[in-house]
Amino acid sequence: MPPPQSPPGLQLPKLGPFLFVMVLAQAIMSMCFTAAGVLAPVVAPALGVSTAAVGPYAAGLGLASLVGGMFIDGVLRRHGGARTMQVSIVFTAAGVLLAATGVPALVVLSCVVLGLGGGMLVPAAIVLLAKVAPPHKAGIVFAINQCGVPVGFGLSGVLFPLLLQYTTWQVSLCITAALVLAMVPLIQPMRAALDQGRSPGARLGGRALIDPMRLAWRERRLRLLGWMAFSLTVGQIALLAHMVSYLKVEIGFSHVQAGGALFLSQMGALVVRLAFGWLLDRIGRYWLVLGVMAMASGASALALAGLAPHLTYIGMCVMAAVAGGCMMGWNAIYFAAVSRMAPEGRAGTAVGGTQIFTATGSLVGPLLVSAVLKSGGSYALGFCLVALFALGIGVRLLRADVLERRARA
Image 1: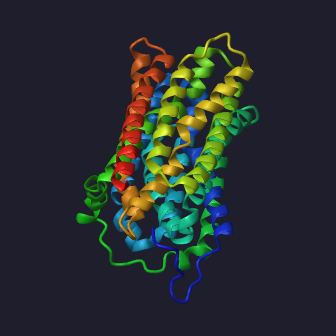
Image 2: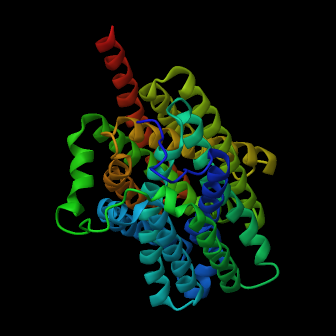
């Protein structure tokens, strides 16, 4: 990754204020993406469906994010990372407002609009970080930036159940949409410097659609990172989509208690992202760090599946924090790895290309658990199945670390 350079005549924003805005934006937007899983016990009966329906909804988010990622190369080249992030914010808010109508057809459409926003968000953020972050601090900078995601997921687990005690789920979603839209003017002052060098005439269709995926598949190391993202996303999205319902319906805790556990799981993810981001800057062994995280993800999914109905709330909270840290702590390291291993100047394109793997994992994870439930199985069995994906890729990543060290010897 090349060192950050200021465009001619324009000064890039300072790292501290820039990171603050990025973390805040991702935190607020992440609340939107996990709202379905948190509100499912209340919204599903209101719409006349079961809580298992959140699985197909989450899968729809993943599919739509894939479509958003397909266009990302041309969008980033034409409009720049800052403008693309603003568009992502608008799409996200629109998706939340569609869901707030309570009209079944519009709720289904909301997952498409939300997914499109999510598909643009991460590549745009990576492009901006690659411009501003010093190379020797890439691990911790990407980790800090990604902390906004678990913070948002965690806050949704706490705030939505609390808001439901005072207002309706529709009003709760409208409040969230308003918070999201407030991020657009915060980004605007930085836009000129961050989007300097864009190509207004860049194509959005044709070759621009397949270039990100072609890049991700052609480069061996990017391809392995893609398979890793697929395998770990299976467990990550299953956790977000089904954890609250699992703890409420199958284990027997209240909605507020289950939401609190989701919050603690994301605080665990926050700690793990920072710790492993710092570790990565110290040792620089991407495959080793990611391999260890994958093995921990699989092990914690199995432990989560072993929760007993007589478990104390304190014990469940500890398990939730561990599971969240292990199953959701890998993203920052993954994005740092993609940025480092992508061809120079194509970090955002590489992330957009690997999103086909991530989006597929977003489809498989929640749908797999929903299929288990519809066939008479349990949430616990579903978590056992998603654990196999993480354990399998963990072995492959650790092997890649060994082979790479041998090649350098």
